[in-house]
Image (cartoon, rainbow, N blue to C red):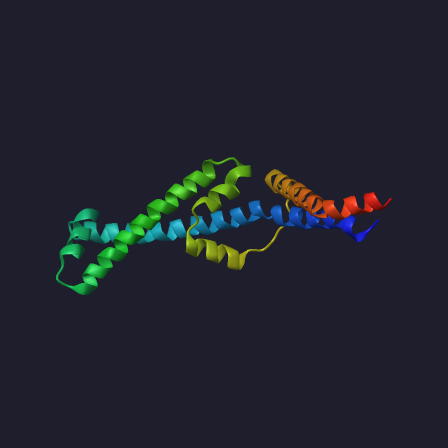
Length: 165
């Protein structure tokens, strides 16, 4: 057996190992997403409580920030508005991920990931042995695709050997 014919098998094994990690990475992303949503919700609840304690609705409190003749208060209002916008975006993504079938969750994570959550998930990612059905399917599909790619790459070298014989 020549080294060239081992190439697709090795590529398939590497691809399978890497592909099987997609469901695990999406799970770790989902956990960080849930934590971020929990913290943002805590901040929004405190803001709403403070506004209500002052006799204001959320919109009225944000309007006061926006119309204040104070640069700091204007900046605070923009920060709260950005936090509310981010919360809405993260909630939509969380719902889309949770509603997706387990095999499709990695696609939902990659569709529009939050940069800070993605960065944190990537920095803290720990590979795991895929014992779930999605992990095994992703691993198998990745292994097959990489094996097929490796087989196509060595095809010109294999034909040359048959022509010599």
